[in-house]
Amino acid sequence: MKRFLSLFIAIAVLAFVASPAFAANTTNLIYTPTTAGLVNVAGISSDSSPDYSSGSFTPANTTGPKSEIYISPSVLFGRDVLLSEIKNMSYWTKTGFLHSVDPRDWYLNIYTKPYAGQLGGSWYGTRIGAEPYFSENINDPANTWNKWTTDTTNNQLRFFESTYGYYGSYTDSHWSSFVAGNSLPGVRGPGVAYGSQPILYFYLGTGSAWANGFTGQLDGLRVELNDGSIATVNFELLIPDTTAPTVPTNGLPNASFLNTNVFDFTWDVSTDDVGPITYEFQSSLNSTEVDGVLTTGLWKSGTLSTPMIHSTGAPDGRWYWQVRAKDGADNYSDWSQIWSVTLDTIAPAIPTLVSPLNNSTVNVHDFMFDWNDVSDATAVTYDWQSSYSDTFASVLAAHTGLTSSTVNSPGTPDGVYYWRVLARDAAGNVSKWSTVWKVTVDTSAPVVLVPTDKNQCKDNGWKTFTNPEFKNQGQCVSYVVSNENAGKRN
Ligand SMILES: [Ca+2]
Ligand SMILES: [Ca+2]
Ligand SMILES: [Ca+2]
Ligand SMILES: [Ca+2]
Figure 1 (cartoon, rainbow, N blue to C red):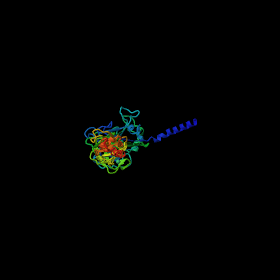
Figure 2: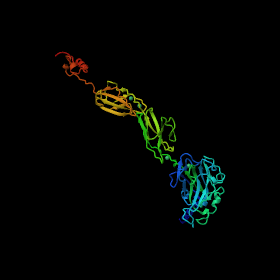
Figure 3: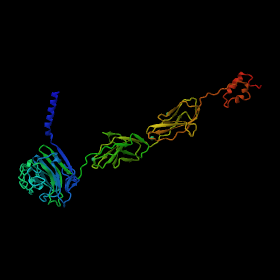
Figure 4: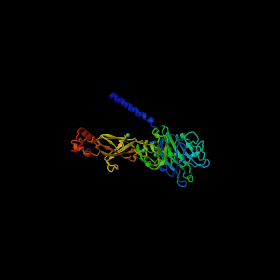
């Protein structure tokens, strides 16, 4: 156990020691004109430097105060940063002129924190500046996004200290040699080594005296540190919406049948970080799908502002449908589940009766009523009724939802019955009632009366002692034959 524990501690220490090697971080920020701390900055929506879509900054007021953007190292890197830690810096501007024609542009400053022993009450220690028009190998076409950088390429920035009112020249140092030097001595005291100074702010702004009429644009500040950390600030009119709305949840109809083609498809509202949310609906009589998306024979709605679509006039059949949400930046949610609805607007045919035949008699209590099957686009069931009257003023017996075209009638008492049938389809369409048929149930055997007295058969008595149907005529004949005096008068 002890050995196991010490091994565990060793691993933990190793992990702790190793962690600084992974400290480099990348931070990509978006600043808009409403970001706290900005002065006289406006956004442009659809003109950006390469790699920093989709908008940029411009002075909000070209006759008023200068534009100012202060960004602290803690915002960019989450910690204090010394000047010596900066590996490189760059930013982009776009102006209407070559800098040889009009040198005004957004410039870069770095303020350091007040240093130990600094004299006076200034809120910063040193102020370091860089102006695009002083850059080496300048290549700055007008009305084009130009990148200003500490790298040894075109437009390599030169740095100077402006704490005491010096504002640069074409012969100032590039970053690496500048930061290796000392700050200027002056009223704040003797110079200090730049490299050891913690940064108070990175700053991008327009010059006070030059601000009037300047309309140049700014975008894409990038600062890289020696430890590999990289921070960028993308200047935008608005925070870009890159998050899709939630997938709509289907409402109605679902796996159901409708006997009208005038109805609504509905779904639950989606949510989105920015909005506004709209919807797109699609449907098809063809269920073919790829990864949950209908692909074939599609009917598409266009943009819908409410979570429903009214449907009218669609042909009968099984319709598959789904919907997706879209936000104002055209981010789409996934398509919702594919649901279906079967439209059937046509009633089934009227059933034709088969048996017992109309006006027939059956001599059993248990028999079957039968009629012809009715075919329909959707599943058919039948309703059956019987009555003592052919008007069905009151229904004697009834069955609904019969799935076969027969019904048994066990234990039917003797009597005269009328019966009829109708058909229903799955969508609730109903045929008219069939013609009415009559059936008589008579299970009683004929009454056979045997004469017991010759008088019962004489003088037409063979007719009258029994019923008018002459059922017993044969019995009288037999009686007379076997009683020789039966037909004679007494
Ligand atoms: Ca931008
Ligand atoms: Ca969104
Ligand atoms: Ca039908
Ligand atoms: Ca049948």
